[in-house]
Length: 142
Image 1 (tube, rainbow, N blue to C red):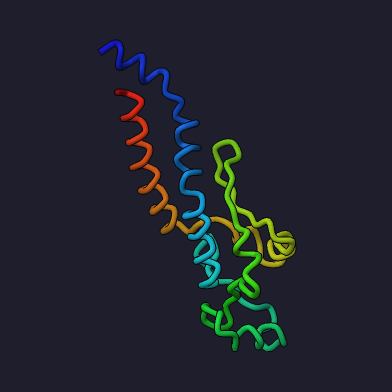
Image 2: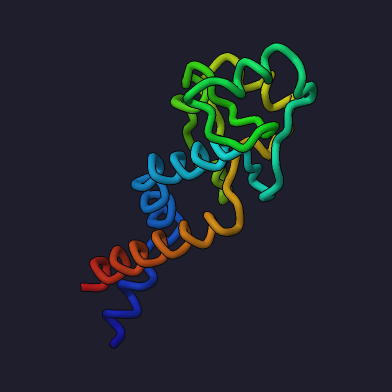
Protein backbone atom coordinates (compact mmCIF):
# COMPACT_ATOMS: atom_id res chain seq x y z
CA UNK A 1 0.00 0.00 0.00
CA UNK A 2 2.77 2.45 0.90
CA UNK A 3 4.65 1.56 -2.28
CA UNK A 4 1.60 2.50 -4.33
CA UNK A 5 1.35 5.81 -2.49
CA UNK A 6 5.00 6.48 -3.25
CA UNK A 7 4.37 5.69 -6.93
CA UNK A 8 1.45 8.16 -6.93
CA UNK A 9 3.67 10.85 -5.46
CA UNK A 10 6.22 10.33 -8.21
CA UNK A 11 3.73 10.81 -11.04
CA UNK A 12 4.04 14.21 -12.71
CA UNK A 13 0.41 14.66 -13.75
CA UNK A 14 1.04 17.94 -15.57
CA UNK A 15 3.75 16.33 -17.71
CA UNK A 16 1.50 13.35 -18.42
CA UNK A 17 -1.38 15.65 -19.43
CA UNK A 18 0.91 17.60 -21.77
CA UNK A 19 2.22 14.42 -23.36
CA UNK A 20 -1.30 13.02 -23.88
CA UNK A 21 -2.59 16.28 -25.38
CA UNK A 22 0.41 16.64 -27.68
CA UNK A 23 0.07 13.03 -28.82
CA UNK A 24 -3.33 14.05 -30.24
CA UNK A 25 -2.32 17.53 -31.43
CA UNK A 26 -2.98 16.78 -35.11
CA UNK A 27 -6.43 15.40 -34.33
CA UNK A 28 -7.31 18.42 -32.16
CA UNK A 29 -5.99 20.87 -34.78
CA UNK A 30 -8.17 19.02 -37.32
CA UNK A 31 -11.19 19.75 -35.11
CA UNK A 32 -10.32 23.46 -35.26
CA UNK A 33 -9.94 23.24 -39.05
CA UNK A 34 -13.31 21.52 -39.44
CA UNK A 35 -15.00 24.23 -37.36
CA UNK A 36 -13.47 26.90 -39.60
CA UNK A 37 -14.56 25.11 -42.77
CA UNK A 38 -18.12 25.26 -41.42
CA UNK A 39 -17.72 28.94 -40.51
CA UNK A 40 -18.01 28.22 -36.77
CA UNK A 41 -16.09 30.07 -34.04
CA UNK A 42 -14.70 28.54 -30.86
CA UNK A 43 -17.71 30.19 -29.17
CA UNK A 44 -20.03 28.26 -31.54
CA UNK A 45 -21.15 31.38 -33.40
CA UNK A 46 -20.76 32.13 -37.10
CA UNK A 47 -18.15 34.10 -39.00
CA UNK A 48 -19.80 36.15 -41.74
CA UNK A 49 -18.33 38.18 -44.58
CA UNK A 50 -18.17 41.87 -43.77
CA UNK A 51 -19.19 42.57 -47.37
CA UNK A 52 -21.16 39.54 -48.67
CA UNK A 53 -21.73 41.23 -52.03
CA UNK A 54 -18.03 41.99 -52.47
CA UNK A 55 -15.85 40.41 -55.13
CA UNK A 56 -14.03 38.01 -52.77
CA UNK A 57 -17.21 36.76 -51.07
CA UNK A 58 -18.91 36.16 -54.41
CA UNK A 59 -15.85 34.36 -55.78
CA UNK A 60 -15.68 32.14 -52.66
CA UNK A 61 -19.37 31.34 -52.89
CA UNK A 62 -18.83 29.72 -56.28
CA UNK A 63 -15.70 27.74 -55.40
CA UNK A 64 -16.13 23.94 -55.16
CA UNK A 65 -14.01 23.96 -51.97
CA UNK A 66 -16.50 26.24 -50.18
CA UNK A 67 -18.16 24.16 -47.42
CA UNK A 68 -19.83 26.76 -45.21
CA UNK A 69 -23.33 28.06 -45.87
CA UNK A 70 -23.11 31.48 -47.49
CA UNK A 71 -22.43 34.14 -46.17
CA UNK A 72 -20.32 32.31 -43.57
CA UNK A 73 -16.55 32.67 -43.85
CA UNK A 74 -14.75 29.32 -44.08
CA UNK A 75 -11.14 30.62 -43.98
CA UNK A 76 -10.15 28.38 -46.89
CA UNK A 77 -8.83 29.60 -50.22
CA UNK A 78 -5.49 27.95 -50.95
CA UNK A 79 -5.52 25.87 -47.77
CA UNK A 80 -2.29 27.33 -46.38
CA UNK A 81 -3.87 29.05 -43.38
CA UNK A 82 -5.71 25.93 -42.25
CA UNK A 83 -2.97 23.47 -43.15
CA UNK A 84 -0.59 25.39 -40.89
CA UNK A 85 -2.86 25.36 -37.80
CA UNK A 86 -1.13 23.88 -34.78
CA UNK A 87 -1.48 23.78 -31.03
CA UNK A 88 0.98 24.31 -28.22
CA UNK A 89 0.70 24.21 -24.46
CA UNK A 90 1.49 27.40 -22.59
CA UNK A 91 1.40 26.74 -18.87
CA UNK A 92 -1.93 25.00 -18.31
CA UNK A 93 -3.54 26.40 -21.46
CA UNK A 94 -3.79 24.84 -24.92
CA UNK A 95 -3.24 27.54 -27.54
CA UNK A 96 -4.11 27.20 -31.23
CA UNK A 97 -2.57 29.30 -33.98
CA UNK A 98 -1.44 29.09 -37.60
CA UNK A 99 2.04 29.50 -39.01
CA UNK A 100 0.55 31.10 -42.12
CA UNK A 101 1.47 34.73 -42.75
CA UNK A 102 -2.23 35.69 -42.81
CA UNK A 103 -2.88 34.40 -39.27
CA UNK A 104 -2.45 37.74 -37.47
CA UNK A 105 -4.47 39.62 -40.09
CA UNK A 106 -7.34 37.12 -39.99
CA UNK A 107 -7.33 37.11 -36.21
CA UNK A 108 -7.40 40.91 -36.08
CA UNK A 109 -10.29 40.99 -38.60
CA UNK A 110 -12.37 38.13 -37.19
CA UNK A 111 -11.23 37.84 -33.56
CA UNK A 112 -9.38 35.37 -31.40
CA UNK A 113 -12.34 32.99 -31.72
CA UNK A 114 -10.83 31.75 -34.99
CA UNK A 115 -8.64 29.53 -32.86
CA UNK A 116 -9.83 27.07 -30.26
CA UNK A 117 -12.58 24.52 -29.96
CA UNK A 118 -16.30 24.67 -29.30
CA UNK A 119 -17.66 23.21 -26.06
CA UNK A 120 -18.86 20.20 -28.03
CA UNK A 121 -15.38 19.54 -29.40
CA UNK A 122 -13.82 20.18 -25.99
CA UNK A 123 -16.02 17.41 -24.58
CA UNK A 124 -14.60 15.08 -27.23
CA UNK A 125 -11.07 16.18 -26.33
CA UNK A 126 -11.70 15.54 -22.62
CA UNK A 127 -13.06 12.09 -23.38
CA UNK A 128 -10.03 11.18 -25.50
CA UNK A 129 -7.43 12.67 -23.17
CA UNK A 130 -9.12 11.38 -20.01
CA UNK A 131 -9.05 7.81 -21.30
CA UNK A 132 -5.42 8.09 -22.40
CA UNK A 133 -4.41 9.76 -19.15
CA UNK A 134 -5.88 6.89 -17.14
CA UNK A 135 -3.94 4.41 -19.28
CA UNK A 136 -0.69 6.34 -18.69
CA UNK A 137 -1.33 6.56 -14.93
CA UNK A 138 -2.03 2.81 -14.79
CA UNK A 139 1.31 2.13 -16.51
CA UNK A 140 3.11 4.30 -13.96
CA UNK A 141 1.50 2.47 -11.04
CA UNK A 142 2.56 -1.01 -12.19
